[in-house]
Amino acid sequence: MFLIVLSLPRVDSANQFSPAGRRIRRQINACQDGNYTVNGKTCCLCAAGQLLTKECEVNPEDRDCEFCEPGRTYNNKPNSETFCEQCTSCTQPNANLEVKEECTTAKDTACRCKQGYFCLSEPCISCNPCNKCEELGVKNSCTGTKDTVCKERSEDGNFSKLIPDIASLVGWGDMRNIAMADGFKKTILDNIQQNNPKQAEEQTISLLTEWEEKHGREAARMLMKALLKNNKNSKAQALQGIIRSDRSNKPASATP
Image 1 (cartoon, one colour):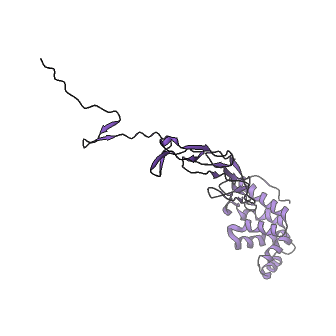
Image 2 (cartoon, one colour; image 1 turned 45 degrees about the horizontal axis):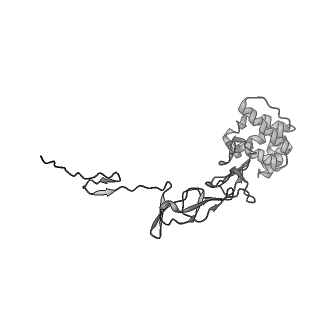
Image 3 (tube, rainbow, N blue to C red; image 1 turned 180 degrees about the horizontal axis):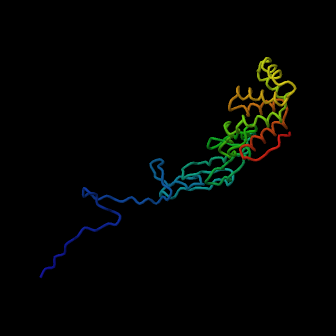
């Protein structure tokens, strides 16, 4: 009896067959962070936080790498660079920045605005002072990436119903001077006085009514601005208190 031995093709674990039946070799990548080609040779990349000091010669992983200098230089991704990037400084003059996260060999410094400053760009090079909203008041506080949102002029309360309280606060003399500086004609002021002889509070109420007619929804804001311009800071502060009290329905004293 003859024994017939059939020779079967050897299965190579490093090979596979393509759909067309051709045998192709699987490429096994030994480079954990990827590779690059130089002078016809394929070398492994250095890891993030490192720089290349010597190209590979025989095997891809034979290249030499060194770490960047901690706190001074970094590389934030796998690379074949022969240098590291300088860490960003947050102490530039007048930039109003401070350190959020320290620089590491694999990550640049993260800066942020100091308290009271904001910046709209990323990364931020210089921060701007936050708006203080001295006339209108703050609606949303300033953050490092957003400026203060001031209250809208429509939130200044119902100026008409506040006129008597405002008149007692401002007084005829200051209100008359403010109106004249704002461009009110002298004939208007004279008529108000003639129609309300020896009644200073009534005169002031009439003038404030004219003031609202001229400035509309901005009447309170414009009056506060005029008081500040005339160094009547205590009256401006008291006016703001009257307006805030109206919004919260709490009584407020009109005495500066």
